[in-house]
Length: 141
Image 1: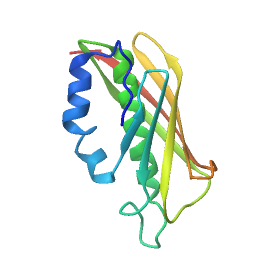
Image 2: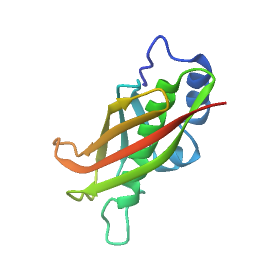
Image 3: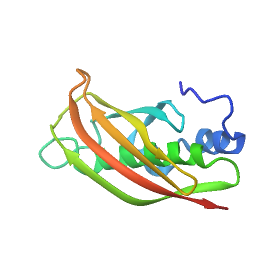
């Protein structure tokens, strides 16, 4: 069950609920837990998102991070605006072959035209698997 801030743009909430965060997020099995501009959480299964030797695919880490960072930036952008990613990078620190991963997205900068977030992906024991940093440009619709 996703927790939405009470002051969140109703149109954005409707889009998130209707789309499940978008087609790719649905395919990856991403589940939103808590959403806000400053801090968001989501989780994703390892199963179905592995590479050829059975490890969680590095790109899956990035998809999870970008999904959460983009939604958090869109929340910050507010009504009549949207967020578009302009930079992303990831450092993978540890691998995982089963279970679920959790992403915690924390705002580094919430400006008028840019939002930068750090997303830390951890395993069930809280060990850091990867760190994703992304910057979104905030645009008028």
